[in-house]
Image 1 (cartoon, rainbow, N blue to C red):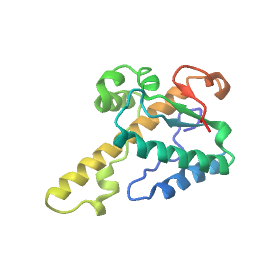
Image 2: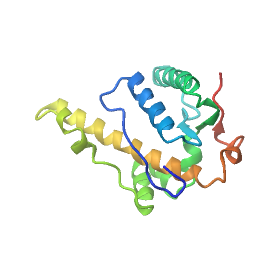
Image 3: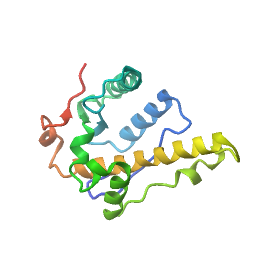
Length: 171
């Protein structure tokens, strides 16, 4: 997103390996010579290791790729509750509240069922499972939009450093 709220490019990780998705993030950041990169952090209080380990591993790979791309100093991690509380109805309203907040701001996420139609089985239990996963994936677009709107409420990246809910990448 640019400072005027225009979406420059959006994509998802559907059907990609973690490494391919991270490469896409780096490619886009370099292509647009971004001023800042914000990554949604792991929520505070998450205690189940089976849930947190894969995310932490992925964040480590992402931090390494950002470093190699010369982008690490432009990167901040943003706690989910921080940006969610900035929009009415999002913190308690979860995905439905986020979608409503995004729509009020003029954003509609891509239709993931149409975008990835070839990956949806024609029948059976697997069809319902894939459709549910795609529906969940569309919430990532909404969250990314709202996060970008939130960070553009600050004057600069330096203005955001050290604020509650924002952290530098730890290495």
